[in-house]
Length: 52
Image (cartoon, rainbow, N blue to C red; front, side, top):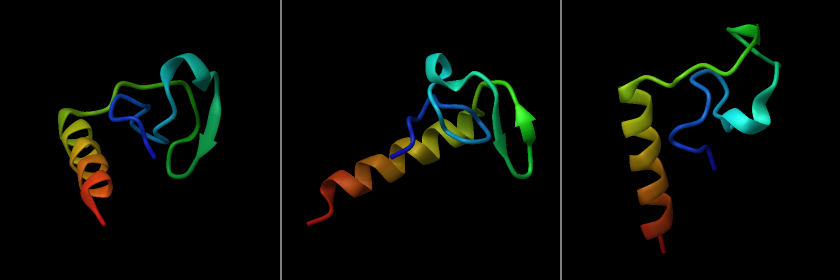
């Protein structure tokens, strides 16, 4: 499950991130997710928790 505040490209928490590879970003440092990404991730997490 992706942390809502995880990297905008790969979802990994900032303190665990270092430098990672993920298309389309390629090699990247942790980057703040957009407000829309945070909202979507929170909605996904909520729907996963409430699923039977």
